[in-house]
Length: 341
Length: 260
Image (tube, rainbow over the protein chains, first blue to last red):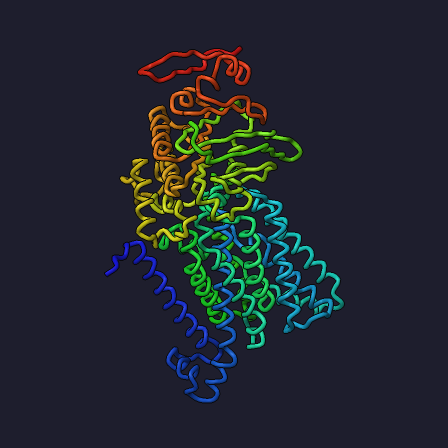
């Protein structure tokens, strides 16, 4: 009989509870829309029961949307936890570093140049390239052992640049309708996504997740600083490159099919720390599950909130995420005020 | 002291952004020795320590127990050097025992919750040697500076490496802990390890070290026993001070006294 430490048991229970929550939310996502379906009906239809109409609604219309919410939420949560682990910094996240914004610029450029329609491989490839570039440049500017302030300022500069470049593309777009279409696409949405979109994004998301997960124990060694981690046998420069690559693959792939959905990567690890603890390696999977739960919930909420036009899910995550970010800034005030973290 | 050299460096030089911070350093050190590395600020002590551990690229050759350092993979280097940097940073509020368990990382124990029995035993030994067993389950961030520095030392001891490199392990500690840490390191050296300690405290160096390396402006200005390496001439030339010298209970006292 193996004795299990209370902390380990708490982590296991929390992870199982998260899996349950994500499953429920996924069923909820499949049941929510103009035609409301109960979880049981959803399950029935999912496995080939129920009426033809129910089957089409669940399996062809809503299933891709739910899969995307699940996968994209997970990779955003995982990317946030990985970046926070790499930089030993609770304010690190893809959206604060301008990765989604840069990926969006890459995708928008493809669309407006007419090199790609919104369903081609060029989109994720351009998104991933730009996301990689943005995080690479950011970590290059910040250098080793970067403080909080430096990272956030560099992230602000990069996301502003990506935003400006996107604005320029829209500015130069041949007709106002194209610009409007791009603007709406940028807001971030999971509406009307098909299995074509799932095939476009999922391979990259899975590859990114595998890369990030494979490095998890290195994040733990990094808790003691880069120099100590290196003295323990961690190849820190290689680790940095792999994390940038993993985040870029995941975020770039996600942005290419949904537009920018921000702040999930920032929030998810924070929600988990009080329950799981601060070990950056243990935070990865719970953060990914929390990311899934958050995005599924947000995507259900946009369908339930009564409004004249559809609220985009990216707008909702930002509306919730930015105040949370402000709260975190307040909590980290001392480190930020000191200039060096 | 004619035993086989464990760590040798020949013609070691390091250039950082155009400035040569380490110039042509050669040394040969044996196991079971406590070596104090002293010198004024900016003399290149930390750079030498990092270069010896392979954390800083350098020209020249370093050999560890007969192997060229450059030929060893990272993991293998990590098993041979326990490296204690300045500052004892822990970025997250981790449990003390988990921090110490990271010392087993080079041995493949990457998860503190899944240690083999030999890893567990090494962690236990390290915590006992540094007297931190009592707060094994507390978070490092809740500890005092002195306790935290002992945790950092325990983490290094848990590697059970043949060489321990410690960069100012006594900095910012009260007198009692400074003595405790040096005694710990002395015990480690006595158990067969080569310990190199960077320190600004000439008194501790003279009292606890077998060998003192004196650095000045990137060069090795003197090496030898504390009496030889910390002679009046060398102390005056390198540190620009005169020192008060005495004996107490058969141990050497060197106390920096006045500028020259």
